[in-house]
Image (tube, rainbow, N blue to C red):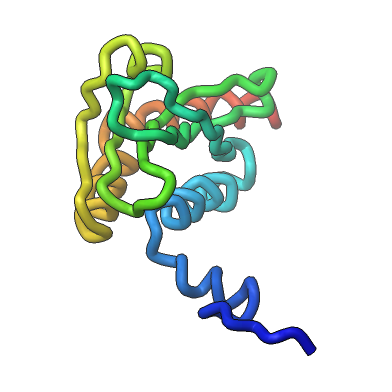
Length: 146
């Protein structure tokens, strides 16, 4: 048997040890949208590499809401910017597209730790702006689905 010197047993052990990372927390919220709406709406993450050298982050995770009944209409809820080998800091942009951010990078939030990240994510996902968008898209899609 080959010697195993890794600090984790298997994929389940690795997943357990990454449960409080920003990408994992965001993925859970993206998944929760579909579960909470009966998949009338669902979340879809899109990953983009940041190539603008003026931006201090290397990766962008775009949280889009997809509405299947509206011809797969897509609306960006937020964009989380991070670096490949660090969990924090992360920056979050709301109400702008990736290309707009690359033209002028000025994220609304920067989180230095897990507590700040959870607080900011909750604030965004329960904000009047996001809730109005979710309710409107749900109403339109639900009307077409019945």
